[in-house]
Structure formats: C-alpha cells, structure tokens
Amino acid sequence: MLPVHYEAYGLIWSSQIVMPELQLVAPEAGRKRQVDVHIESRDLTGLWTQWDVGSDNFVARDGCLFFKIEETGLFYMEQGKRIMVSPVPGADEKKVRLFLLGTCMAVIMMQRGILPLHGSAVVVDGWAYAFVGHSGAGKSTLSAALASRGYPLLTDDVVALTWDAGGRAIVSPGYPQQKLWQPSLDGFGMNKQNYATVHAEITKYAIPVQHYFYERSVPLAAIFELVPQPDHEPGPVQLEQVIGLERLHLLCSHTFRGGLIARQGLAQWLFETASRLSASVEVNRLSRTGSHFTAFEMVERIITHIRKGVHTEL
Image (tube, rainbow, N blue to C red; front, side, top):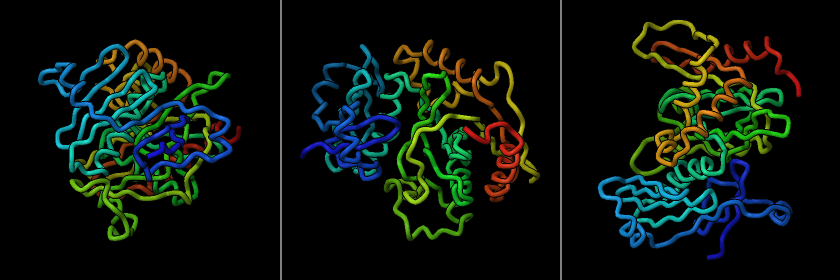
C-alpha cells in the first residue's frame, strides 16, 4: 500500500501501516513540509539473528535501537529517521500500534534531540501545563477533567519538548486520543461500552478527543508531578514547589522510556536537556491521599494556582 502521511509531536510521519489514532497531514501542509520519519513494515527476523543479541530484548548500536516484544513483533528505530516493524503472524494490531505510538516514537524523539516526558498536557490561556508521573498516577484522568472544564488537551502519554528561537520550552501536539482506566471512566460517568480497549489484554480504554484537541505547539509554563498516596487517610490535595536538584531528578525520572536513554549513549544529552528545562519552567508536586476520585478537586487547585501566577498571556 502507498504510505499515509500523519502529523504528531511536531513531526511528519510517512507510514505503510494505517494508524487511525493519528491525524492525517492536510494536503496543503504536506506539500510544504518534508517527511521527517518513515514507518515501514519489514521482515526483521534475519536482522535480529544477525545482531545476535542473546537474551536481551533491547539493544542499541550506531544510533539505532532494536527490540523484541514476545507474541507481538520486532521493532527497529534508525537514527531518528525510520521505524521498521515486523509483526508476529496473528499479532494484535492494536498492541503493535501501541508500541509504535509509544516506545518507538519516543525513541525516535530521543534520537532527534526531542525530550519525551511521560505525561499529559493541556492548554490554559495559551500556555502548556504538563502533568508527569508514574503509570497509574492519574495524568490522563487529570487532563481529561481539565478538558471537561474547557482547557483543551495538547497531548496524552508523551509530552514532546523542543525549544524555540527565544529559548522557550515548546510542547508539540500529540494526537487526539486519551487512554483511561475503568475507574476513571466511572468517575466521569462514562460507559465503557461506548469505547474500545487499547488492546485485548488490558481494560484501558481509548477515548477519541478530537472535539477538545489543541492542534498547535505552545510554550510550556509549568510541570506538575502527580503523587498519589492511596494508603493514606483522605485529605485535601496538596501542591508544593519542587526546588533545587530535586527538579532535575524529577525530570529525568519521568522521561518516557528513560531506561533506554543510557543504552543509546544519551545520558549526557538527557542531563543537559533536563537541566535546561529545570532552569526555565516552574516545577510543582501535586499530592493526593485516599482512593476516592479527586480529579475535579485537583483541577480547582491547579487553576487557582495558575491564576495567581504570571502565565496569563503570551
């Protein structure tokens, strides 16, 4: 099949694999911009054998990263310009795309000098606010709650950061989909019957968000680390500023697929990039206790904090 051109994370992706989650490149934009990354379907079994990786399922050489996911496929990323995938016969197509949209695209970003943080971001008054945290911290839930209050989603799962000519950190739009677990659907009063799962093995649901998706890159004003404490007694949401070297550690620890940084020889790049980001934006920690649904309480806390700050106009 002919490749289809998509746009995500500030890049143009030419793909031989249909990616319904992504936005098609508008014809006029496609004529003006060159393809940044090619996604190809190839038989990689011979190359995997040739690399002789032993028992390691992830290996990096010469600006390339190669990995294997059992019962899913082989994935190869080359110098920030190409992704090749060799699905296992009968593999779940959704699961193959999940790795393409997540790990593969994040590695491409790393290879191109784009910092991928593990988080979501929304737009408030023309500025991006990013929410980072470990899996299950509530990043997507919080951004969905903010979107329901009129603050559009910029990206979910991966926050792609670059720099503009003036030295400001810039967040590029991802693609118009969120992924929410069953408890979040319940908290929003959403019926799971209306949504498809991300793939067959998990009860995480893909939520189309075209109607509140923000399609332009915007400068980053602040980062909030989400820290759930479900075993503590329920109490009010707490917001505190992160200072000093802890900011740098926080940014490094919430880099998407950060374990692949050192494998690719990019540890120094991450340190320098995270240091630059740490010095240029506000970094906060948002803590919640108990296991009850607190997304809208967190929204009120965040918006109140933003309104007291200086990021109210461009």
